[in-house]
Length: 343
Ligand SMILES: [Zn+2]
Image (tube, rainbow, N blue to C red; front, side, top):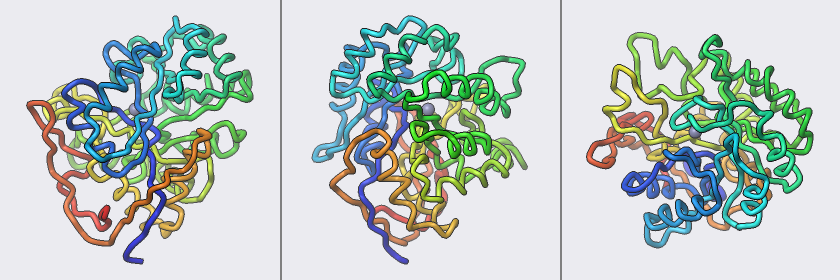
């Protein structure tokens, strides 16, 4: 197969940041995708419908001319989120979920929820309204090893959450472990997961063996190869519960190549092509459309995009750097040659 056409894919988890960063991130997000679930972890975070509306306007002001790409907004849950705010979010027409960050889990997550018990009423309201809960599924307890934080989150919090809110639509985002893949596979149909390109392409050896590669550092952190294998299996299986979410996140080169580097990979310059490589290597290119273009809209209750994209087998080089504010970003796999190219 030298060419494949699929329904235009969507990205069900991405980071755009704000203000001048949007000049880089919005065109990159719109490059291959029809829609994107925009994470609300700005500083300060997007916690109200009014803030989400203003942020959406700023994003759209950077949308390239002629593009129909649509930002799907998300509210950031805090200990103080009210059920009234959830109801107005559900009615506003541009908010598609609420994000749970355990306080301190990742970039700008300090305002996150300190205890799930604090948002019990909010979760009940979301369940009633059919609003999606997006979960950063890691505990932040300092006594839990960073490689175990996702698996421990499932045991300590997610099992109980799924039991207490049996109809709540939950996306376990950017899953990284066999435990998460198994949990979602065996869960009821209201529970799904997104998977990033980096967690399909790499394991922790790629990041740490023979020298540290800060541009592969993201959270949840890359795990050992048995987990990468489990993610590849579910992503390429055709299972409707797994879909595309890049977690693409821009960090300037100097903030990654640092004594205390930031977490996050900027994959948008070649995101759909990187997924295509993964699916081809797994002998499952025919499953790419379900993972990238159908399973997400089906879960969110949205129509498929009416446009399509074509990928051609035509080797090209992913840009080794992308301008960003007054600096630059080193994209995921930047400088590498890749076999599939967006037509
Ligand atoms: Zn993220």
